[in-house]
Image (cartoon, rainbow, N blue to C red):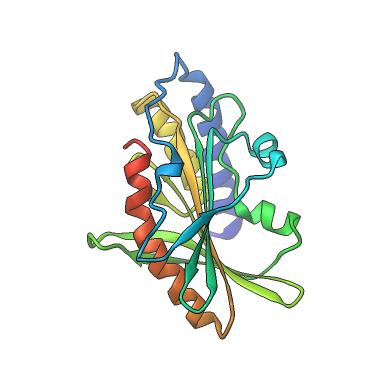
Length: 211
């Protein structure tokens, strides 16, 4: 299948998912969740501090809950964790994608990619892996979508799963998890740092959001 055919197929699936999402609505089941602030303040022995959430972010992203926290690696290198949770995506509030907000904040993506990450329970899950740059600052960014026991990297597949779960479970709740760390010495060091932390993050997020 060539690129044009794949594009048409994906657009068709997204259109079908969007129509079905609204057509299937009959009073959504909103699950109970734990606040994201309950995410461990120490993970892998790393201390942390909560970061303020700008007022514009609440208005722009329409999240129902958000966590913004800085974890400090020995040697003073930070890991920034951001989690956004949406109880419902039926009323126009949808999980955003960092591919839009990063350029909007002045970051250029120098290496967009995707990789599979092995968790402690043996599962392999896909995550988005980006190297971004603003001036002399370079960072590694890893992010994924997490909901209903599922970890998804693709924004398109995430929307399709939302459609399926809307019909199957009468739910459209979802979360976006993003971890960022600066490149201090080299990319390999930053990649190992962020992926080691990400492997521990997935199961902890799963304890807070419903399956």
